[in-house]
Length: 301
Image 1 (tube, rainbow, N blue to C red):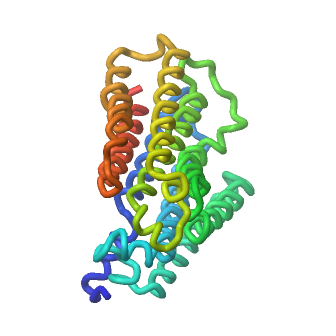
Image 2: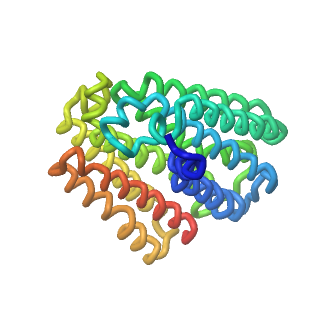
């Protein structure tokens, strides 16, 4: 187990700080660059926005913790010597951290009731329960767990839009609603692609504990075909959306999207077929980088 001086570093690794910072960045960009600046104004105060971010980040962090608690056996195989829970942090200590994070999210949720009414506790309860069920049960089922995580990532964006739903929207070349739904779909599909890639990467450990993930049930070749189909669907959806809103974009904006999102997606889809499971980590990282570039695209629009 980690010593007292090593414990902070172990906790930081457990909480995936890059992912949490990415969530914060995405929510700030969506709020400031889409909702607050496209002719409608945000209905969230600065305090309420911060509470939404706290609720989202603590819920995601708690999800990482409980996921690692349930994955102790699998991580000993897939990440020998690198797993945090069960090696650097004891399982009881991990549970304490989980409940502290969940309680923090619950407090933020209750403070959001004036802005969200009962939508806040409903969303928080469903998300927290869903992440628990995902890590304990559905993660080991083909596709179901992947869809649950993808929905959570899409909700990270849509939760900012909920207070705006009943507000009037101006007729704009690119309205806030269109951008929100486009980015929600983008987030959902890119996360689903990444989750399936991670399942292939973790196939050895999953198979050892009897987990019936997509590549374990369907086989790696079929799972790769599904990934390629999702990549093709995402690229087609992006092209169709930009054609539909033809004239609303500058050429350099489209060039940026093509170079940083579309081409990397197509190259990854082409090359992934010849890769081994232990090479999938690179493709998972590529998908995360594409999310970063996609978020930047919202800024330059």
